[in-house]
Length: 253
Image (cartoon, rainbow, N blue to C red; front, side, top):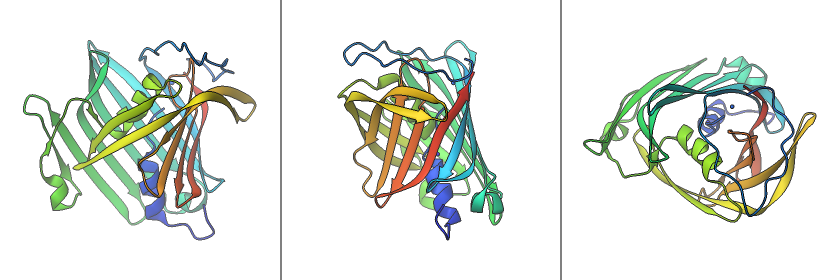
């Protein structure tokens, strides 16, 4: 989780930051109350997104959440570049995080990423050992990112952070998460808007809360969430003040 000359690696990096996506075709969502929004319940879903780069079609993305029994779940993301430079290089990204739900917290257990395309072919696999409070990745990584990472309560992968934003977004709230993935650790801080705004996607309109990361430096991430939709209806990454990758919900079931 395109400009006139697209940088393939930039596209891949941006798409990797956008991880998260839910019954039936997407419907118009009524405006949530600014003061009383019920917490969504995690449920299995399959969602489809249109992917754009600098305002031009670049491909598609699908996100699936699967309940594997008891407290065990899995979230999968697939991104396929079918247009523009993403189509030329045959970009294909598959990510997955196995996790459990403990006291409503999403706790990662295993994580994998596979990237394919012209001049591309990378795979990483990681394990979160909560008994030892340590996580470790193997595969196509720099040596420093193969070293164990000390875990803290609340640590999540990128895919889980997107699910958590949908769960946690409340008007005016500040959301704090610690991203731990592929041997990297980063603090993510998001500001939720006080009021709602309308997001129109095709023929459908959603009343949403805008959630923006406020500590990403030149890389900005904005997520729009709507009451009754268990996935962001739109995810936008901006680089150096300009729109880059834009994922827009098509349907979910």
